[in-house]
Image 1: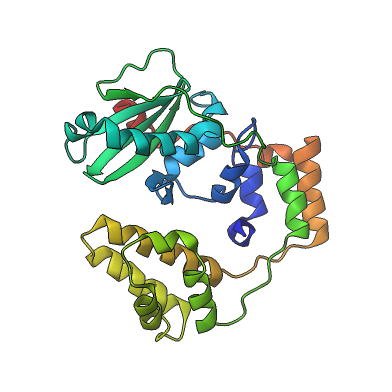
Image 2: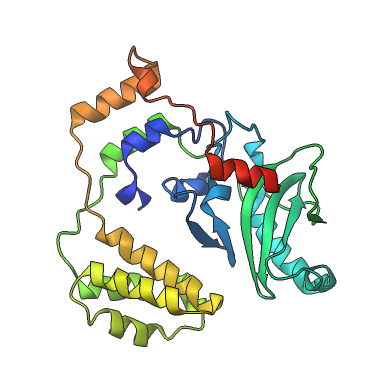
Length: 283
């Protein structure tokens, strides 16, 4: 559960889930802007995911509806790349381009011939003044119209969905979480051999350290992606449970829902940072 690493303070402070955004984004609610996740075979930046959540909506408004078509866009893009390969063959490694679906636009980058990443989410601006090439894939189906929960609902759910604390290192838990992840079976990695090597360590910190070193040393992106995925899985079970009192949770929910006298300390509007401004200039 993503609640393992989500603090209620951050739910209150971040400008996310203010509008209607898709349910699937809850899984990435705690992602940092500099991090990335593998979705539908593409590496997606935390920056792009947070924009689809409305994180910087107050600074740079964009239509959040595009998130409902994001996974459909990626699936159709993958199919179109096999047919209209001339467009993608002309792109140089490291070159950026825009992809449009249902009127919504995402900024992407070609890393290598078989590795592409989603850099940012641009919404549906009427006129994107960009020097980057545009690839329009037309209409795609929605992945469903179930909305992510509001901040108040997340806080309320946190009282019920409090995760069990992982008290000590467990080699069997490492094996179970790696071998049980279906996405890892699609990569060219010998999971049995890797698990045997990782479980030779006797604590999570050493495993994460070994994975970080392997990711740094590995030049092939097709190997780096599953290693990053495994590192994130191990990091999740290594996180300590955050303890909350009923009084604290009730007070947090009351302030967020009713806009109490001190609610301004929670409702902080983010105007974006320097890195964000640089990305805007690029796109």
